[in-house]
Image (cartoon, rainbow, N blue to C red; front, side, top):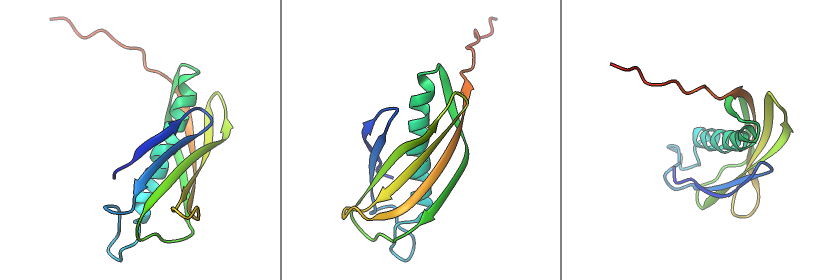
Amino acid sequence: MGVRILEQSADRVVATMPVEGNRQSFGLLHGGASLAVGEAVGSWAAVIHASTLGKTAVGVDVSATHHKGAREGLITITATPLHLGRTVTTHEVLLSNEAGQRICTLRITNLLLDRPIPTAPPTA
């Protein structure tokens, strides 16, 4: 997908993705690619927050609205928190084109779970 992380913190994760290589058959940025990259960046933001609590994050809900198509250029993906709790996080993820126009908005909710306790490998 060609995703590059530019900035990452509990307050904001920013990434880019080229439209080239992520188009559907009509030449537009594929909606599935928008959803996949938005979920990945939003989940990464949740994992960063979860790690400050000694936890990990798993996605439980994602929804998206496609506002505008894109045929070329670089898409910027920005995830910002709407809620950072001890058990649930919710992030808004904005996808914008090089002109700064909103092309897609996602909302993702992640459940924060305790990290699994490592177990010793079985001995023979």
